[in-house]
Length: 482
Ligand code: ATP
Ligand code: MN
Image (cartoon, rainbow, N blue to C red):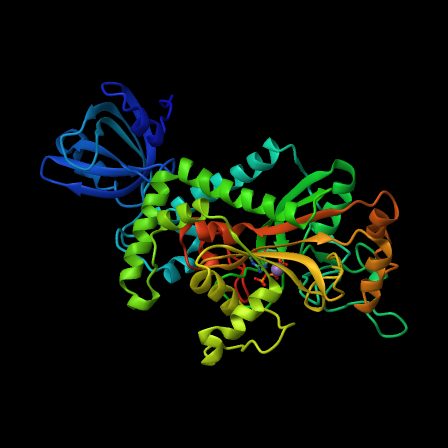
């Protein structure tokens, strides 16, 4: 029988010098002198490797030849205090078992710097790199922290459907779900696709947001949240958009817009604090990685703060709360607008804000996270609560440095007449949405909610620059590998 595995993370934390242990993992590098081989072993439990020392004579060339970068091994031996610099302890191997070899001629991940672009093409292997394993551990910690944050506040986790028949928000952004034979789609007498013959006997889509169903739950459990996959067929090939991403959507009865902002700010700070408290080694590695990447960039594009500084900065500052109307005034008077440097110039109140404007406000003007609120009614969704001025709604977006919009939310319109008035004006089928309107028909209450894009949060916390690099298997236009 094989010995029980001890995790490297635990060994490095506990340093049980003198104990006999079995480590299992993947070889990062092997350095061999005439008499000894030094094997840097990683088992995914931590960014840190442990050094396994193998006597060449004892194990023989034949076995050690198989111990190459990427190969998987078990090593049993005694933990000793390390002689060399760079590590506190090392394992003196008494036995080594090779599970799987990795032919150096063929294994793509050799110990040299690979570009992120190259690694994206081998996303099925990139998790084995330091960078991607660090990101995935941080991602895990953040998912855990999301649940912990809400659980500790007494929120209930609700699973809203992934397949839906409501396309209330998506103006054609939703992926269709069907089991029609695609080369023989049934049509009705009018020549239209006959969805009555489809699996659900109606049109169905992958969800673009769990909000509407989240609202149903909030009308019973008061404070709920969803955390699930979200799909958008938007053809925007940016560094901040995925076709499949994960969204966290709390929905709270009895919250007004300010309560909503307070919760969102508290949550973002909680997540950052959790990362600082629990992911120190991975963050230190990612910070160094970002600094090295920055060295290849022109001075003007380099980050002004280190990753840790950016994270602490979010913790230590109140987010700036600015109305849309104030923001438009700032943008109109701004240098890039005056000098026509913006791609989209801000000319009048009512303009939709682009990422360049959001980033100007956050990175240049306020130099801290910004919560923009009270947006023009006409550029926002039908369910947002109408303000008394007759032209704005109680929407709020949170903008982060380097990211732009990280959260979008609002106080919801709880008044039946106001809501249906908006739906009619925006050509939203009131009949079909009758189930949603029952929330307002029966026991309606003021309520609010928001959506946090999980990968945008991971981008911020890891200091990565492309959203494709913070999800294990990115789906973007033209890319659905693995
Ligand atoms: P954007 O304007 O940046 O495209 P949005 O206004 O369409 O975002 P919302 O509908 O408000 O986004 O969704 C809530 C949150 O979900 C956003 O603030 C963002 O963090 C995240 N999000 C939206 N679309 C995507 C996407 N395609 N990929 C990853 N995250 C996204
Ligand atoms: Mn939004």
